[in-house]
Length: 299
Image (tube, rainbow, N blue to C red):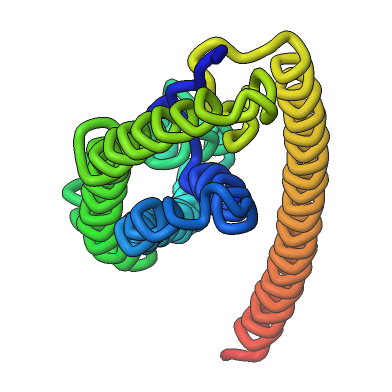
């Protein structure tokens, strides 16, 4: 007998199910092996419990990722709001306070780029100065930012814990124990099948091995399997690259649209200010003229 593969810890839990059902199906159907089915099937509850527990940990990881994404979006919004107000207060001069206090080393678009991480670290010191600002808008943004920083810390901590729990579960926890037991059961079954093969030479060489899938969970995958994995990985990389390019294009377009909108708003404000200044100048001239006429009429 050539022997069977040892399923590695890297094998996905659904692949374990495929391995289990493949072997169970063949053991159930062959007349010489039906008596061996019950012992092998006794592993099913543990396999199912392991799957459900891992799915729960995966669900926690996705929930943690969602929390981080949403709080990061809130921080991005506050970054833009603070940048807009401080730039107005700085009279459009990016080298002047208060804009330079927060964006001297990075533009807002650069600060927003990471998901939490460096952005959160940079913004952590902002609330104390924002709440001392004479501008009520910045005071309000400082209070909101303080709350969001605390929320971001909680989300980041939950995410770190979720990833660690899933990693530990797969490498040293119940999932590892499940795979170890599954390998032991497969080897024990393979030994019994080998005895039957020896007792019935007519079954031919490789009969016992045929009850197990070849290559799907091996520590030493075949060239064909590696080619399949490589092709799948390359397709995934291309998909992710396209997704990234599309997202980058969307963000760039959104940034341009926002910049255009801000420019249009400032032009409108400038026009309104000029009109107000002209109206004030006309009123001053009118009052001066009236006062001059009144002075001339006074005896």
